[in-house]
Amino acid sequence: MSSIYKHKHRGWYCCVTLPSGRRCQIYLGKVTKAGAETVRRNVERLMASNTVGIEPDPQIQAWIALCDARFRAKLQAAGLLAKWKAPTASPLLSIVWDAYVEKRADFAVSSLKGFKTARKHALDNLGDRLISEITVADAKHFALRMESKHAAAHAKKLVERTKQVLQDAVDSRLLATNPFAGVNLRAKIDRTKDHHLTEADAMKVLDKLGSLQAKVAFVLARFAGLRIPHELMPLT
Image (cartoon, rainbow, N blue to C red):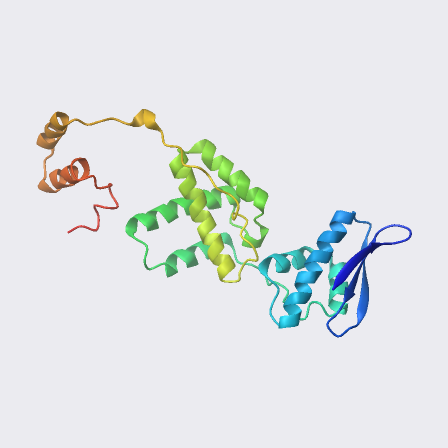
């Protein structure tokens, strides 16, 4: 159990009752009541993980890592960090990206090409830096830049693929939280480029195509509705 109370002069304390029955007081400093309450809730979650002997969840681990070293020492002295491990230096974005693509043996050629394109945009805009340094603000700005420079569907794919790579880093315990977790773009369909190719016009195009392979590809797209190229490429 834990509770908060205000110091008689200024600042707040968090009073913690440990599983052993020992009570300890942790001075939080001159924070707001809401800030003190946030700390109290996080301490409760930290104590819960200690009680069952498991590591704190990723959000609490990230919170501990961001805490002031002096406050973290107070948590350590209270025995609350028994299951917490200080994060090691995270790898560079390029290394994480390449490792993820390499282990995705299920990727089709078109997916590999798409991730190669997304990699270039991610490194150009986020920089090839430690993934732990990428913030939520960086992720949001990246999404806005992609949306302003590219068609909506393409921008959405670039953001989704970057998010996918960093989520794998979270799953691999290389990163506490995914900065792209709450970043989403809507794919707006540009209907101004739509054009109905009539059957008569389709036959004119078919007559102009030189090879049988090109003719087959065109017929499958126009009359069978296959999406080009990724639904056509696996065919023999």
